[in-house]
Image (cartoon, rainbow, N blue to C red; front, top):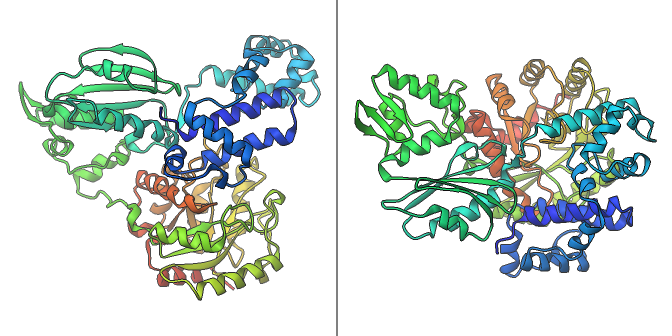
Length: 576
């Protein structure tokens, strides 16, 4: 049975939450939560790696006990002890954990103080304003909890795209081996590269009848079949993700792929162009009267309405059709265009890998250079570098570079932008580096004016090269900073400071809208992995996908350039 990283991470998370609800040993709770983060951060499926000989004991922070539980889960799909723990905790309390920003300690406090046992009793306590009376809550926390309950009621579950890709890839492989199926593609928002996915749409091409419903019933990961018909079948996977599979003939495959890729607004615009030409476009093809004139390929659909092919990532009706009409679509950046990575961590702070190991991994990933940007001392939890520890690391980088071939390490730091816009290390230290990556890691709730001024004051410092994860958002966890981005982009272009597109799946920051605004303001983008281990360079693929959604070309990206030119551009950011 296929077991995905997200399945295992979710089981570890649940174990940690249920132990916290039971007031278990904090060290045990944190071990499960740390294991969930480690597994969720792996860019490759752990089951396949273990099958190839990888030992879970080699995962960072995973001891022998948890490694044994990982092996059991990969074999059986069950985490030892979890079923027993579920029985000991009321179902309603587990449901409360799904509320945003409501952790186990708060759920336990509400249960013990007010007898809250499920959403219904929580709503009653909120309505009576009893929650504010519980220690640690108060009127403000009560109001936030009311908003969380309301948001949860209308919230459709969406998965991060890399998580959805685990399930998409497995089902894609399965369908391609079903007898009679000639071609399979994933469509929908997944194909457009949206950062989160609500469900998965598959198109299957066959020259004859295929029982898709039967095929889905035979799939190991199917939990239930919702519908089964001659052209469309739907199922819910054991992960809770819904999949829709449509069967189309070869003559309609291109038009169906275009139609079901979307977006809806893009499709409407294309249909309007077709009507102006006396044509009809739908999922079955392009028609002049009753005669089909195109539809076997997507390119033929676009050609029929007078357009060149438009990449799926651009199909949001944000000007791509107008640009295509005058042959001014950008040539979108590709993963192979990247020459380096300017945001990389090691075990000197919160990474898991040595300098030499990161260098070797970057070389395997096809990169020519990386910037070592461990955290400066400010965030105590990551044991950041002070001036003396940084000096020792710079010596280590010089020594290692002398022995390396095919890869070069740049000397850098990720330094915090403090609330007043100053930096967490003095200029006399920063001036010794090749690159300074500045970032916001706290005080996220400042007003727009104060947050904007904070960033602009940081830009005024003489040694700031790149603004890392500029909006400081975490998808579905923390909103973006409230910033006057037009002022930030204008100042970044003038100074210059380069803006990062952070490739971590929970960040993808800048988002597609802001990254497009940045390049329209002639600000160079650094597509960075923010890798914390040797496998982390695989996240660059997601960053490139986000960049493509933002209309980014190779020329718009700082680290598509060779090292010599990157050094020159980085020197321009040092004003002293």
